[in-house]
Image (cartoon, rainbow, N blue to C red; front, side):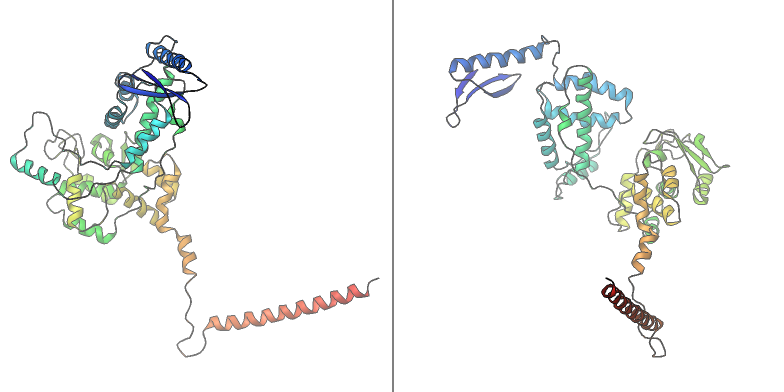
Length: 414
């Protein structure tokens, strides 16, 4: 503990360490060292009361509250529990050692800025427990780590999702009467521009299927995604119980919005499902173990996209492809929202941009017609221009006559 007087401003400052963190605070209205020491005693007393709950509102360490309160809440109420666990690891790493009441909006803003400035680290391979990789896999992994690829910048949308989890943690603390206010409310979210509208062209689709020869299970999943607009997780979770080939529909029971929906099947999707073997309860079982659903298709898809020389295309863009093609065929946004499972019509409206006929007609009007006909005579549009010029001259003569008569009438009136 120490108090001193600043030479530049003349203000008294106190400094002490609590819970491994140094607190430095200016003591306002202190004129002497004795006043500064009294102010320091009051500040430490208030902090002591907050920590031990002597003021009726006990404080709690941030990491302990996350582990004891937020994660059980997330597991019981949220479908994104696994994602919340990953985000909480980041939050605990940054706010570890801090108390809930000592966390300010300035610290939250600092976390947001530092998190955005930190590039994305290379993801480690997820392996099962007690699994020993072969020497070949070890060398391949080491080669990826030692590559000269520049680190990817962190996207603002990722930081905003982490901020949402942090805000929910403080909201639960407010509900538990551990905090009076949520410090995240005064911190603005980052601006995002991550609305992708990338879709697969017919030529790219042909090249993609060419390089997928011998990987029928990957090709079947891609065909299902293009012809239904289903999300990747919805396709992986699809069971034969949810497929009705007689009525040509599939039921999506677990969706991102939490609302089940029914998707009609076109001829291509119906033919695909009719020829698939029913060796498992899942429509697309894992190629390694048929009793389980397929877990991921990302690596196979990325290799195929790279081999087909398709630039900037992700698996989720197959869903954009389905939406764009349906909009191209004349589907209205409300029908698209029902098929895609969007709760907000604004999410669906962006797919109509690529085929907006009104915009196309407006742009087509800018094209100039041919100036000379095949016979060497002026085209029809020139004759129309002459007619318009004659009409304009008539209107001009009529206007001059009308102005003269009006002027004469005004001069004759008393």
